Length: 290
Ligand code: PMM
Image 1 (spheres, protein in one colour):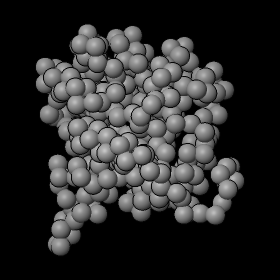
Image 2: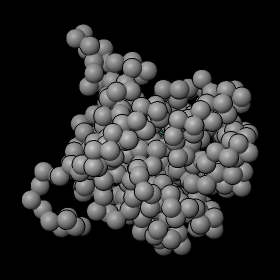
Image 3: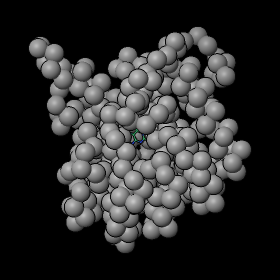
Image 4: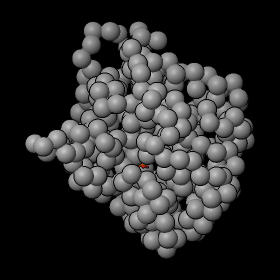
């Protein structure tokens, strides 16, 4: 999987939630055939990885047990593996990750950055697979109470650095790690925008960075109607593509999106135009904020 972490072009992860209650696609792919067909479609649209998740992480979501989560994701992972579709498993549980890796997933996408389950590092170290460490402060039922920062970028950066150190201490190889600022997870809209604007400060942690803004509520707020009603979830694709492109142009390794085709098309335009970079608006020399 070395190529995946050093790709010739930005990586696109397509979201496949096999949950009844995810904020954007909850309930649509709870049926096995529908889930597999959607995963195959996203792969054909150009997704490098299909991110299969069985537990909703929308704000306020109540946890399900590990057996329920495994029963949702494993048949889908098996079927997509048989169809030759590369996958990540979106889970915070070591048992689910291990079973999904055995069933054909290639990457662990852990929204808790290894905090929710102390066994996760061991599973990843043994598998030798890439591990996406997202910035996280607590489970979804209470995460919005944890959205308090003096300097959101500095604090997210420091907390991600601690997760990188913990992973290395547990024996995970440095070249297996990907970081993610965790947009919307214990973050309000202003926090998400700060993390977007100051992405280079997270990039100089030295790991590939995944940016996952797709259809999130801060984009709905940005596009609210004159009465203040947020733009509905299904009508946030253009804003998602724009923010994904900004992140890639700033140096992100990859993006996690629902609307794969739009994203792949936008990245093709960016590549054809010479991959223009966004220069951060700062006088600090690279690495000086470590
Ligand atoms: N967001 C969601 C789920 N999984 N994984 C990573 N690495 N980063 C994220 O921001 C992230 C994630 C929640 O969104 P969804 O309901 O659309 O899957």
